[in-house]
Length: 359
Ligand code: NAD
Ligand code: IPM
Ligand code: MN
Image (cartoon, rainbow, N blue to C red):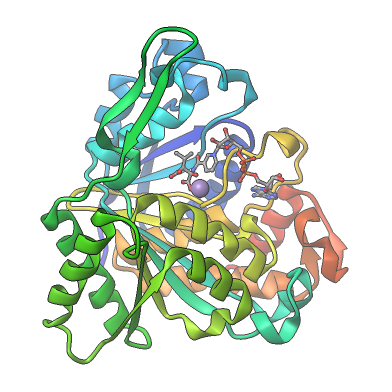
């Protein structure tokens, strides 16, 4: 059981980041205070906001604050304002930097279809009904971090380069994570790769099969990433745990937003050996920023994951997800979920409705 103080570093970031973080903090503070948990929040800049204020997407102070916290909560980073910056001065580098510095090699992205939102998906109801899967995305290796990388050469004949590479130990630890998580679910892992073409995937597949020897009670299948993208919209209920490398996991998990009805509903936990980081899977949504229409569910569910994984309080996590479900069942919707009708309300009002259903 949790007792004493908990320090949370909050990184609101850019675009809708500050709006959804305010919602999530309202829920976090409510739940923590009712449970008698003293939470200290320190708010630090990251991404575009940090570039503007401090000339770097990941200030040292932000990093130190994260390292000395029990958990980190992040909104989103990025936006058109910084899109033509050089690579090291892009907001996204701040996010990649914090993931790497905290050693967050495992990104858990649950995708669970809510029966009340069946009408919200652009896919047929019978396809998405019952979807309950978990993307286990490797987060500190692969194409995002492999060296060499960069843009070189003379103007007019430049070369852009990124390298997809994995060390055996990186594949082993994320595979263990996926099999362990599968044991708590329906005991089925689908490892996604491009082993028909890429050597890095051939090693991935070999090592995943070796790690699987330790988990004979878990079923293992392999799927090529192009087929996986198709299967996710064709028959998504076939999946339990999807294990995959960094960029494949990034791309495939956005499809989750089509399955649930909106990317705004999807949370994530990034875990390693130190403090974990919690963030929705969507971006800074510059097209809707500042309008009080962003869906805060993904960020609030990320707080629920924080209670479960970092604070060992599955009961409080459940309290939060129940309140969200009740709010939806009572017909409240943010604009992105308007397809199913209901009472369309703004971010603040929607958050209030959730808060009222917390106890
Ligand atoms: P995005 O996820 O920000 O937006 C895609 C679409 O989904 C947009 O139409 C947006 O309005 C909608 N959307 C996203 N979140 C929503 C929410 N909570 N409620 C309602 N609608 C929502 O992706 P993008 O437009 O490709 O990227 C915008 C910026 O965000 C880019 O700079 C990108 O690098 C960055 N990004 C950051 C993260 C992160 O911080 N983790 C993740 C993805 C993208
Ligand atoms: C995500 C985002 C990030 C990623 C970007 C912003 C670095 O798309 O968290 O899904 O690609 O990991
Ligand atoms: Mn993404």
